[in-house]
Length: 210
Image 1: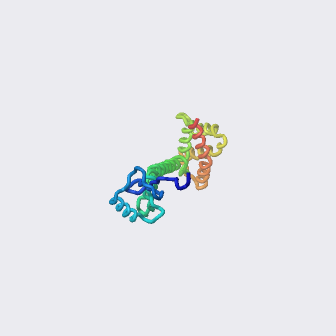
Image 2: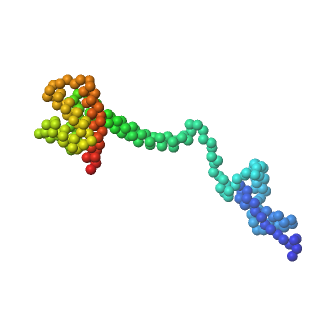
Image 3: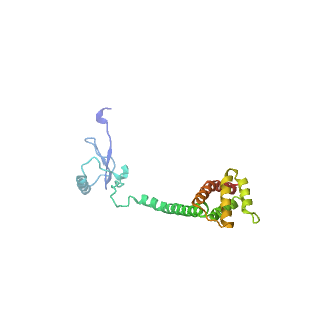
């Protein structure tokens, strides 16, 4: 068998026409296959002439390139919608945190002015001392005198004996002796309370967390 006896049949795909068989061997006829008539051949020639002369011709049925190319996003076309949604979701949490901080700050300020601020008189200092002592379960009781209460508090806070004694003595002189404080006594009272208030607050915290 020589090269002249070799033979092959090929088909080429054309859009809107499908697979068209061709006879590449000179002098041979097509096998029993579809051969377009004259009118179809003319339409095929016109369709081939309209095809773009480009290497990027896409046969959608085989190449899967019928998907549209992504278009660049333009400003204001909703590309930041995800960020907006995320920010909107954060707003309730943010407002909750701000509200919690405001409540905590207001409560802390009220507590400080009510229990911890420097007293304006011996009676205020003694009253604040008894409130914190009550929260720490250190008295006073109804039958105790100021000195008895002071002695009981000194046993609960042995490192603060001097400061407790100053506040109790100043309270007794002011209430029962109706004495007016001198600037020096007022300064001594304020300093004694400033030294005493944090140890008493710590005693309250330890009592409450047990």
